[in-house]
Length: 263
Image (cartoon, rainbow, N blue to C red):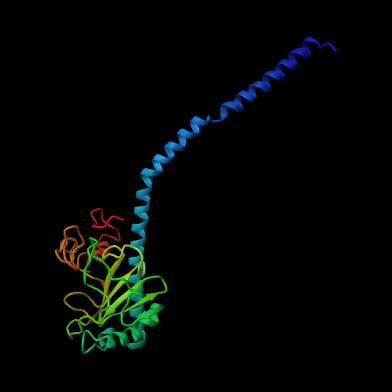
C-alpha cells in the first residue's frame, strides 16, 4: 500500500527520534581507554593517601589503648579501695623485690577488678614479651625472668608486667607495665605499644596519689627531651621512651609530629 506524504513524514520523524535516542545513549557511555585512565588515577591517589590513612589508624589504636588501660587501672584501684580502704593504709612489702608480696598484692587488690584470664608467676613470655627501647634497641630492662615480677593477660588483650617497686614509707608504689597488643604481637617497643603506669599509695614529691603514667606532672620539655627517659630521637639508654605515654596525654591525647616512632 502506498503511503501518503503525511504518513511518510511521520515515519521519518519516528526513525529520526530512534536514531537520536540511540546516539544519546551511546554518548552516555565511557570508552575502555577512559575507564582505564580513571582507574589509574584512582590507584595513584590511593597509593599516595593509604600510608597516611594506615598511620592515622595505628596512632588512634595506640591512643585508645592508652586511654582504656589508664581508665582500667584507675577504676580497678578505686574498686579495691571500696573493699579494703584507701591506698594510704594499704600494707607495703618489707622487701621491695619480694615476688610473694607482689603476688599477694596482685591477687588481692587488682586481679579481681582487671578481669585476668591468665597469670604467669614468675613472669614468663607466655604472658609478657620483654620490650625494646623506643628506638628499637635491645635492653636488659624488664628482661625475663625477673625473680620479683609477675605477668598476666587481661580479657581485653592487654598483657601486664608488675612488681612492688619502692616500698619506702615516703613514696610506696607499684610499677605496672602494659603491652596494648599482648605478648608476641605488635612493635614490642617502649613508647610504641608498651607503656608504664605507677600506682602511688599517697601524695608524694613525685606524683599525686592514684594511677599515673610515668612522668605525669612534668613539663613537656622534660617529657620529650630528658636524656634518659625522654620521648625523642635523642634519648639514649635502657629507659628511652619511658615518658612517651605522659607526653601523648600532655599533648591532648595526640601523638606529636616529632614522635620518635613512625606508625
